[in-house]
Amino acid sequence: MKLNAKLVAACAALGVLSGIAPVLASDYPTKPIEVIIPYGAGGNTDTSGRIFIKSMRKALDAELVPLNAAGAGGTVGMAKVAAAKADGYTLGFSPIAPVTVQPHLRPLPYGKDSFEPVCLVADNPTAVTVAPDSPYKSLDDLIAAAREGKVVAVGPAPGSIPHIVQSAIANAYGVKFKYLPAGGGGKAAKAVLGGEADFAADTSAMEKVHGLRSLAVLADARLADLPNVPTLKELGKDLTLTIWFGAFAPKGTPAAVLDRLSQACEKAVADPEFQTGMKNANYLLRYMGRQEFTAFYQKQFDDNQALLKLIGVKTR
Image 1 (cartoon, one colour):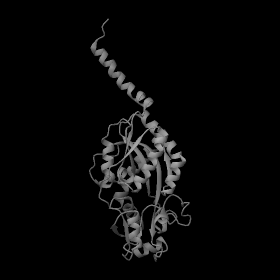
Image 2 (cartoon, helix red, strand yellow; image 1 turned 90 degrees about the vertical axis):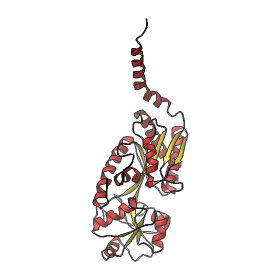
Image 3 (cartoon, helix red, strand yellow; image 1 turned 45 degrees about the vertical axis):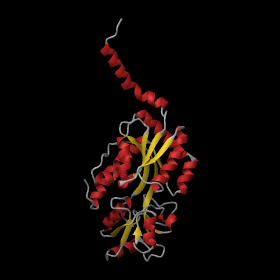
């Protein structure tokens, strides 16, 4: 008996539609996974991304290949992730800004719904830091000087998290800081130590790594490494801003594959080598699986859009 050709084709199509994800998930991964790091070699995202990739190799028992794709505030690399085939063989390792801030600032080939969040691995609070010999002994001192119009903040380009942090603090206190876009991390510290700027609003590691002195942290509670530094909440301003890092897949990646990646991510974060590496690089660990991270990412996307509008940054 001959089967109708259309029926055979329909059955084949049904098999494809119903069978790809389970087959892919059971075999996955069968080839190297490319992990796009949307910044250049040697920076914070590259450092944390490579530590993460090393532990993910062990957790997945597979090869993961880092690929730096720098440019335009991380958006070049994350655009590549969004445009990649949704088969689990291209991931992105991104900090907060390229995925929750930059899409509000200019037209991009991706947006809120262009990714499948896989897991969160680190979350560093930001802090207000000054030179060790700065005349500003508290945040109140800094704000008082700002009311006289003579305080300079330093950080990366406008739209970066440090830029947003200093703008949010200025807005909360009803003052203005002059902003010097000299770069983040070591470049910002150099400007503060050299007297070009009065403070930086970067990660809380600025004190330990670059020898600055912290006046306040933008966290929910005091940090173990900075037990004597008050939070903005303690000072009467309900403001928390962190720089987090997580893994993303292109939209449409099969759920079973995402689950496999998220489970591997949990193992990677629990890996002593990962924990030691991140601690030595001054990162605070914070794991979220894909369901929790998805909700967190979507809220961060909306919250940051509202924050940008609040501090007067022009949004799309």
